Image 1 (cartoon, rainbow, N blue to C red):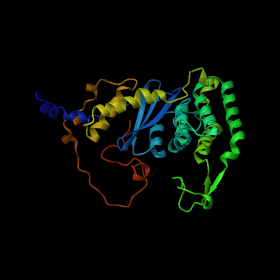
Image 2 (cartoon, rainbow, N blue to C red):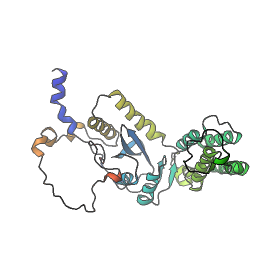
Image 3 (spheres, one colour):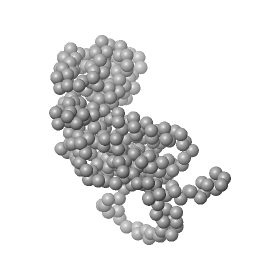
Image 4 (cartoon, rainbow, N blue to C red):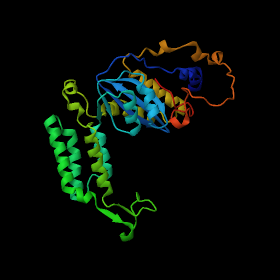
Length: 315
């Protein structure tokens, strides 16, 4: 059989959308992350080495995360990379679940703000403090780290509060300065880097993994498991199959996630008659033009609206 005939005879296989079974199990740890694939985002949840669910959306908004989180009972610990949409969804869906922020992501965020080679002494010292995050293995070391951050602020707080006034400024303006802004913090990026670390420490999400109830289970301090074993392979999958249509690329991602769930059934067991004879199951739906009502439908403002078949899909 020539390739074109083979593709035509097996084209119906793209109609099979695998669904990951929700078991109701209370997991000791769940890692959450979103990966952008083209113009879409796939929110992924894993427990241990297995994918337990996913949700398609356009951006990582609260409603999209809630669609994913509400399928599972609250775990003993959740590990995340940050994001206001996810934080808000966690407060609503899993309000009692302890949160661990990914320390590697925090380090990256600090690096983006002050670069790998800060020019100021304060910047170099703060960079060193941020790099120490991933080397902490005990609660004593965590307390020492928090003390070091507090001492850094005591030493450099005047520098953080320095202001530059437009009337005295010469040269080009920083990109962050608004047209009618009269003053700005001179060391704004350094200030933001410190505030990032300060806020995370005040929220008590840096060292949750060191608490006795989580340490005994070898809890994670990063989302490296989902980043390395899932996200990296998804990017390779789509890179190696760049010719796929958006709908087929989505289906490929869904199959990858399904095959990485705990108990995936063989592909042939998922075949139904409607997959290879879809025309027989197509029904014309009468459209009634009536005022919109509240309901559970997808809304474009919520980030779950249908866009070429990608958004709002879940398992």
